[in-house]
Image (cartoon, rainbow, N blue to C red; front, side):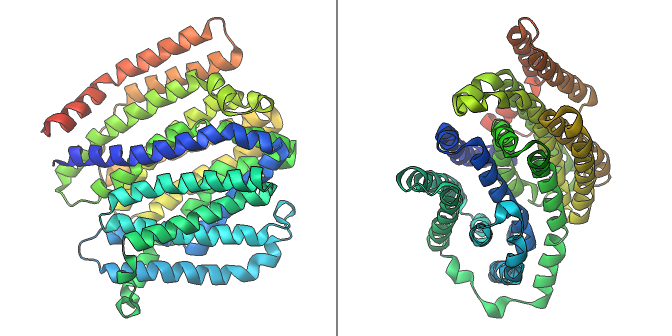
Length: 466
C-alpha cells in the first residue's frame, strides 16, 4: 500500500468513527439546549473549557510525547507508556493543593472537585488512547471515539432527564465516559504488558519532557484563542450571551471534525521515514488536498449556517447563526495552521509551535478586549479570525526553512475572498444571498477540483506521481 493509500485508508477509518461520534452529538444539541437554560449552558461550557485549560498543565502535555516517540521504531515502548502514565499521575497530585484556590472562582464554586476529576479522567484516557495507536490498534482507536460519544450521550440523558442533576450531571457524564473507555482500551490493547518501572530511564524521561513541556504553553495559547472570548463575553455581556456564543461555536466544529479526523491519520504518515525530496513532495501533495477539503467544507458550512442552527438548537439560541460564518472562516485558517504545525512535530521543533501559537494568543486577547466592546460577540469572532490568520501566515513562512510545502498563494487568496464574501452577504442579508453564496461554493469547488481529483486517482490506482 503506497503512502497515499495508507493515509486515505486511515482517514476513512477515523472518519467513520469521528463523524459518527459528532453526528450523535449534534443530534443531542436540541436536548441540551432544552433541559439547560442559556445561562446554565454557558456555565457548563465554562466548566468543561476550564478543565480543558488545566488538562495540558496537569499532564505537561505528555500524551504528545507518547504518540511522538511511541511511533519511533527505536523507542522502548515500555518506557514510553510507563513514563506517560507516571507523569499524568504526578501532575494530578501536584494539582490537588490548588483546589481551594480554584474554588474561589465564582463559576467554579461547588464544582471544583468535579472539574479536577474530569481533568484526571481525560489525561489518563489520552495517554492510553494515544499509546494504542502506537501499537497499531488503529481500529480500536477509532472505535474508542464512537464508544466514548455514545456513553457521554447515555449518561447525559440519565443525569439530565432521568435523574435531573443539571450542571453536575453534564460534567459527570464526560467523566464516566472517559473512565469506561479508558478501561476498555487498556484491556483490549493489553497495555498492562507495557507497564514496567524498570524500563523508565532518565534519558527517555528527559527526552519526552523536553518535547512535551513546550507544547503546554502551546496548548494554553490555543485554549486562549478558542476559549478566552467566552470568558470575556461572560464578563462583559453575561452568561446568556456566552451560552449563545458557545452554540455558534458548535457549527464550525463540522470543519474542525474534518481536520481532526485527518490529523489522526496524518500523524501516522508524517512521521514515516523517507528522503527529504520525497517528504517535501508528499507534504505538498497532501496539503493541497487538505486545503481543498477545508475550503469546500467551510463554504458549505457557511451556506447552511442558518439551517444548521435552527435544526441543532432551541429557538432561543437561533441568533447564534450570526457568528457562525466568521468563526468558520477562522476555523479554516486554524486547520491550515495545524497542518503546518505537523512539520514542527516531525522536526521536533515544539518551541517553534509554541512561539507561533503565542503570537496568535496575544493577538486574540488584545482583539477581544478591543472588539467585544465595539461589536459585542461578533467582535470576539473577528478576534479569533485575526489570531488564526496570523498563526497561519507566520508558519507558512517559517516552516519553509524546514520542509518546503508548495502551495498556491493566488488560489489561497481567492478562496479566502470567496469565503469572506459569503460571510458579508449573510450578515448583511443581501437580496438573493443564498444564490450568490451557492455560486461562491461552486467557484471554490472549481478552484480545488484538480487537487481533489488527483488525490482520488492516487488513492484508487496506487500510483505516486513524480
